[in-house]
Length: 77
Image (cartoon, rainbow, N blue to C red):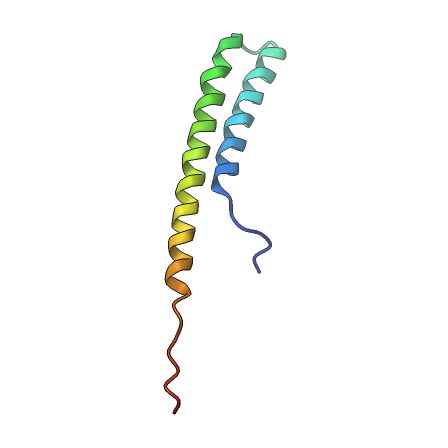
C-alpha cells in the first residue's frame, strides 16, 4: 500500500532544518553558544542538496516510467 509518492528532497531539507532548530534550541537553553551566521551555511547547503536530490529523483522517475510504458504488440492469436 503506497499512500503517496516518495520525495527525497523534502526529507533532506527536513533533516537540515531540524538540525538548525536543534542548534538554536541548544543556544536558547544555554547548553552552547550558536552564532547567528552559523545557520546560513547549514540551511543553504541543505537547500542545495535537497534541490539536487529532487532533480535527480525526477530524472530517475522519468526514466523508469519511459521504459515501463512501452506498448505491447497484439499478435492476434
